[in-house]
Length: 215
Image 1 (spheres, rainbow, N blue to C red):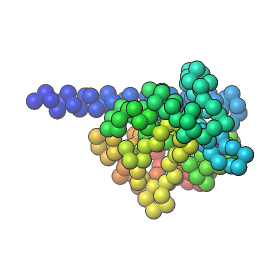
Image 2 (image 1 turned 180 degrees about the vertical axis):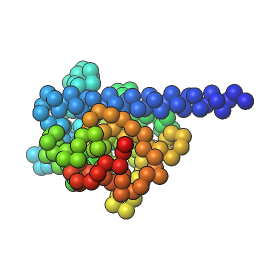
Image 3 (image 1 turned 45 degrees about the horizontal axis):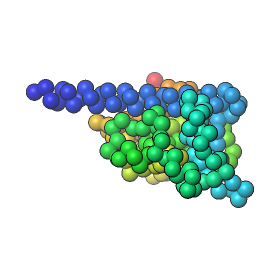
């Protein structure tokens, strides 16, 4: 009789841990913004415009990971012979506690929302706080994806919502039809996957002019 209760308690603890990780990631982004007066671009780029290393690498100094950051060769891609050796050193903050993936793969479930009109532009141009016309408490910056969409944490790849089904690829790692989201104001929230699609779209865009569907 105790087993289901124990399992439920463990799952609840993992969800809290995941939410805390997302909060720390978002706070790292905000400290970066406070220092640079802009958020990081989705990646740094070479002269030809090729993305090299994810924003998750570039906020390391703001996550008390300066030593790890200094090991990266910033002028090389994420999968260069040198940089790919650092994938296995993924900071615990980027780990999803309920993931069924092998931790040695160094994959994260916490991806930025990327594309035109979203937190990351998908280009070399970074966002500034003034760009969030819908309000920073109404704009999602980082989402939790399922195991299938997890990526190597250093890889300059994030999550671009499908126009037809913007919830596709989210959640799937915690009990219940839920996904975790971090907002630009630093808050983290549990989003039901049964949320109205248009309401969810309004949380993804940063300047769509919609009214917030959240209380």
